Image 1 (spheres, one colour):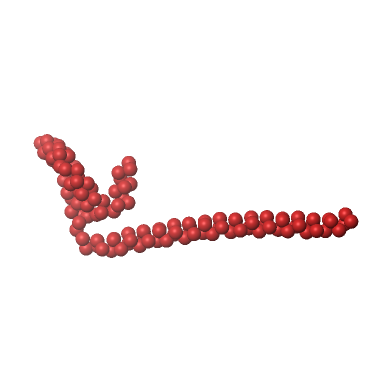
Image 2 (cartoon, rainbow, N blue to C red; image 1 turned 45 degrees about the vertical axis):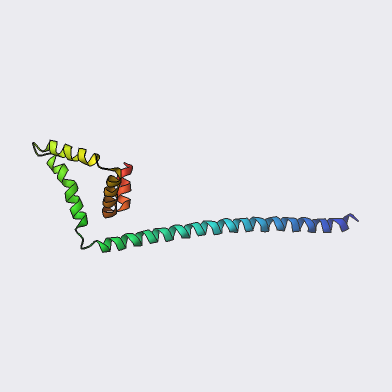
Length: 126
């Protein structure tokens, strides 16, 4: 009689254990799928971003915009070392500081767009 009970109980326990194993496998498969999906999104984002930067670089090959802005930003730095021009440089910066915020932000956007948003954000983080 005990032998006839052990068989079904062992079968039931085996079925229960098999169910637990299948449940663990399913949870693991979901985690793997989520990780793969996140990795795919990250790769696509990086590919898209680098493609965009390449397109923007190609578009500015014949442009003088970057050189113009570099010259404009260099003038106060150079004049600061010319005797007698220090007051003119300081007055110029005071005038820029007195301009409306929307103009200051717009100027910042122009510079960021020209030199690249990434470069500007790295610069301003420091």
